[in-house]
Image (cartoon, rainbow, N blue to C red):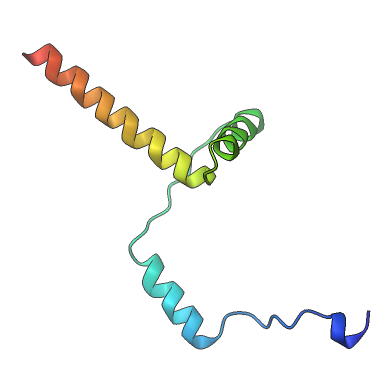
Length: 77
């Protein structure tokens, strides 16, 4: 491979690394265990909805919490 075809990417600059660190300080990671088949199903569904897998999972969580809270309110009335 000639030199002009090689990637010029050299990793994060110190400024990029610092910006990434500031951005990520507001987030946490949680592990979710599922079968490989289920992961594929989740990834495919997210792609069909034109969203990332993370965005889909967060939307599913938000909608489920809202639905559960609405059902809880109806039973307590």
